[in-house]
Image 1: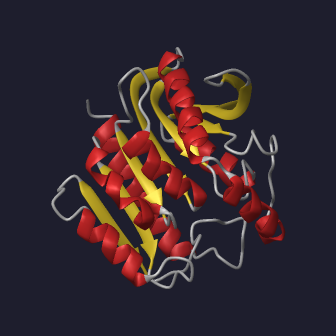
Image 2 (image 1 turned 180 degrees about the horizontal axis):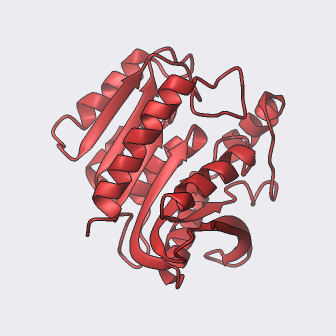
Image 3 (image 1 turned 180 degrees about the vertical axis):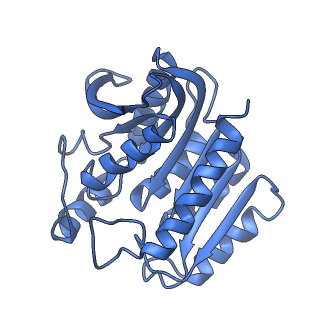
Length: 239
């Protein structure tokens, strides 16, 4: 049976923040940092964490808005405006420091067997890219990263050479927030990296968020999730 709890993590420079934690029935497994959308650590994020734990992963979902508003969460699109406002105020350098603290904490957990990956959605998709390019804990970055429709990735492609792990991107071709040109720029930037793949879907933005009915598209969500699990299993469970 999957067990869940909130844990408190120490932040670099003082203070601390909460993270939702899910642990598999076996009690141990590879780690995954799950990075939130603008809706915060809501039912969607907790459910995804539990699904990952059910697949054998130890999961931490850090509160990335804690410096602005602790434990913010919105159940559906009604919180979109407030979540977007918080996302626009987010200090990316501080966010990277918080992800580094989470990565370090994960590797120190007795439940974690050592290898740690990351998955991020929407805002978290951009944060996942930063996790891969810019986050190191004790000199070591994540072991595999998946980014779902991160709208800020194409503006930070100067960092792409810093990716040290396999990576997977998911984009909806009908996404009103991420242009086809932006996705093409990402594809061009990683074209010489056989360990990085970019997948396209006949879907819009946030197509995997079941908590937001106007965005959710099950067929694309299920396909992307299957690819994500296979990718993580390949890189986190076989070494």
